[in-house]
Length: 452
Image (cartoon, rainbow, N blue to C red; front, top):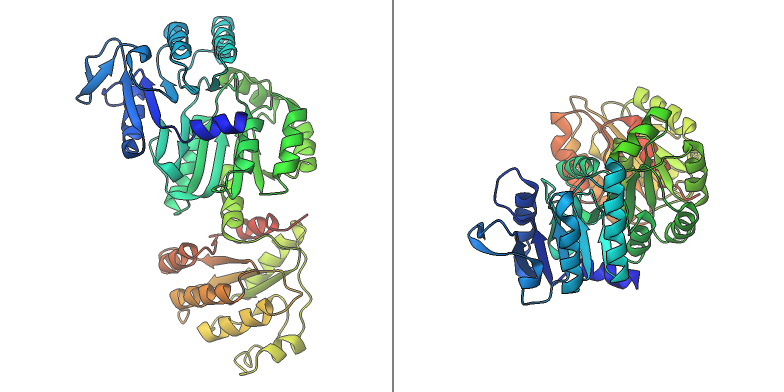
């Protein structure tokens, strides 16, 4: 039943914005602006008892004045006015409610009492609640942006769940800058009704979601979470970023979303037992998601091709630290693959394979072919340091062609540089091959591709 309801909430035929405004910089205007972007897909209604018009359009005094059915009510009114609005939503028999407004359980005893009453009214009417104290939701597949997020991301395979709306905005901004898209986004705030586990369960069966990421301060029902995460992680990767690791962080979480954050080591154990990948930073979560949404998972067995010996040594150091095993490839195997003798100038033929600083694209192709065609190699890291003879764009195009030839073998790149490799990186990532600007990040991303 919950999945069916969430399907309708994420693909509503009609949405009412209660607290709609056209004052630039207001939450109400942010909701209006974002929801109107998908107006061709659904009916949008504005509700505000103190406005005659919003953006030149009709405004209803209350949701009950709307003649048509309303699937989703998005509420952005002061907390003191919330109970009458909820009663009106119940009378209108909406399917779901998103409460953007803050001032509930996270703010003290008075807000907690209001939150409980809201929950009682909605649960009695069997209406699902997202929030309160949240940014809203997005479903890029149907052009639904029921949030006041400043960015509408492109379509993609990552879905992100966040207890913090601000962190969600930052994650989306980083991804959008890097041309990475999303399927669904949920800022779930205080979790008065629907909680993190419910969204994970829903996304586990969502065909548009390839990777699930979440930021959490505390998990309400640990047993329920572990049961759901354990099953969903068998179908698709789940990546977690957990805050509240210190006493100060736990106290901050309590004032942010009213969460009581427990011992971090307990969460680490629960995540590990549930098959959840842990990230230490927002950047690390993004790096892992990018690799997992672009490349298939694999077993351990790393091959490294580099035109810089020092970079290769660093990569081996990082790989060993992360528990990655270098595939044992010897000179005989590499020479057997190199039928045209393109690698004859490479004196040491082993893994990592240093094709030397004067390597032209043909040497990269020959080295990569030797590793991609070898069954011992399960995943390949391609390192490029920019020398005067290096041809980054041609190298990128060749890597794309080789990926098409070996679609089941993951390739991760680390083109080191700035403006000189920018175009090449675009070629790679536009064709589904992740690139990282730093070796440690590339190795950590590869670690998350490895099946445990």
